Figure 1 (spheres, rainbow over the protein chains, first blue to last red):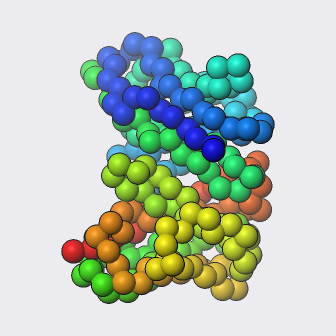
Figure 2 (tube, rainbow over the protein chains, first blue to last red; figure 1 turned 120 degrees about the horizontal axis):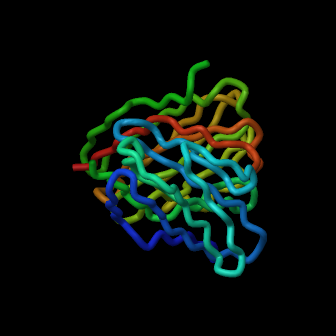
Length: 108
Length: 115
């Protein structure tokens, strides 16, 4: 079965420190992976997707098929990065399968 | 242009009552999705529409849940005989064509509380 696992429910780091949000997946085909973010009192929005190979707001994510991981990284955390982050896998080119989410808090 | 809108933003109902949740997708988006966000369950897929048809309704938790889409636009999610475990935030999303290259844009959600 397709599954996305985010092992950390909560993650707290200091401003300026590196941050890594972990995501592991299980999928029998070729996955398309995404990171979605939900800031306080805002709607869920796409942060970045594997296929675009882009860096958004300083965040990057590399797909590691050997380790079936898609960890989200940022070298220097900022206070405005505090949010709920969801890793998601696209199944059948239609629905998204989400992980449980990680609440990231950046301490000043 | 306007994003995905949902109504009502909050709904409190009594156990056993029926509720209807509405989603207005972004104009021109042919694909529409319903998800449920609940404590302990995270974000779960419910149903996917392409135009007015629903090729994937595999996430609907029981036959108390149904959804329709008319005119390739507005969608309504209906929950009959609500139960307390139906309490959650119901999210709607739309995308241009439904392929995984197309970003899904989410609405603000409807928070449903079943007493």
